[in-house]
Length: 198
Image (cartoon, rainbow, N blue to C red; front, side, top):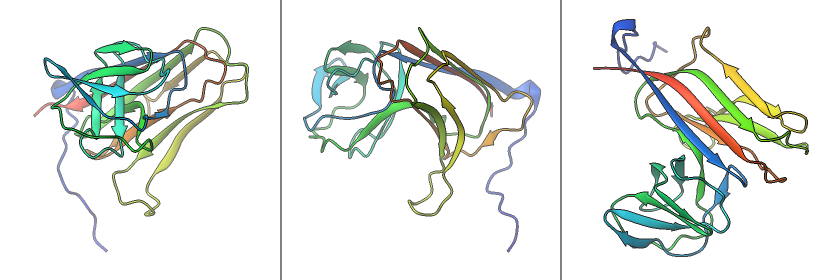
């Protein structure tokens, strides 16, 4: 079997762009959407139903399992049981199985430098913060892997410094962040990464 190399990527320091995503909330980091309809909020906004989600405005999240709204978004407005994203409105009633969580999906080759998670106090429960790769391959092919697991029981800060390692990811890789946050701590996550400029 030969070497697979779909695209030549030159990691030239002169042609790299430093990027970041952020998300914050007060409830579980990962959720499933309500069994309810998306609503056209006008001005290019769509209202997504998620009871007591706790996400903050500006959070970067990924929606997966949806017919019309699969993708990554930045939350533009929040209410107690909904949040708004910029998207082309398509009528869809969610099944209640679609996932929403902080996600890094640049849709290009990327290198992660650092991931920072902060809680306003130690988690106080044996619950893990995890970072996983969704390889974009069909389910069951065993390409998805866990990159980090941290018990947050007695921890309020996690810094994953990958700047000295060669943590490269493909253009169809996604990094998924999850934390149950049963004690409803305020949390904020920040991811710094590099992409190549064409």
